[in-house]
Image (cartoon, rainbow over all chains, first blue to last red; front, side, top):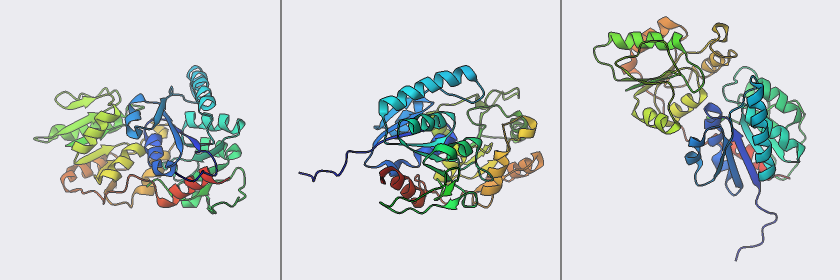
Length: 169
Length: 159
């Protein structure tokens, strides 16, 4: 018999586009140990990289194509409402940004991790995410203030700012 | 085997053409091109416009050296496998990508072992000429840095 847990397992949605954004997201796998994790990306072939965990394929979206963007928004909206995550983590790009935007409206904690590729400035999506996400991380020390991780303690963070706490590699 | 890859989005013929020309000049050359849709003649070479993640994984395993655009998925995979990689950045000024992040990434990673940047066609040619001497760095773990994992974990679990 195990002791009653202090609260239910955290539902987490980890979402990104395929390609480099996904490679970075996948490298966070161990951070989700002990969570009820749902992975989402834009290529069904990626499911086996995180199997047996739940994986949802969503349509590709880009800021530059209105029709696909709307279709992707609907799919991401349905995904977020179905998963009802306590927390959403994204490494980009457009679908992750949408999920964070929707998640922040339904009370999920939202974490944007700007791509390792953005070594000289935060991406446009990252700068926008920093305005509403609970936490925005850069992977380059010179682009963010050091993040203080205090377990159990609430740390105040400035909206619009990016923080640094290491990189995917 | 040399695995040449331009990623899953756009072709990159300013890169494919000189690599193909170099490969043709070799007496034998075991090379695979993932080109994203090219106008360069690749007859006689193994090639595909796009490959699935599974196919890509097999090609990375087979490769002795990877020659690529500055794609983060490609770079991270090479770091995980300890394979040497030659990169050739796409330029936004030539319409090859939306912004200059590929040059920025290349500059930031240039000091890593096993990571070779060709800033122009002549440097690309010079690196290809000594490709058999290039060696990779030590394999990195398939997990992000412990600090980042901790930060993500705390974010999820802290009230």
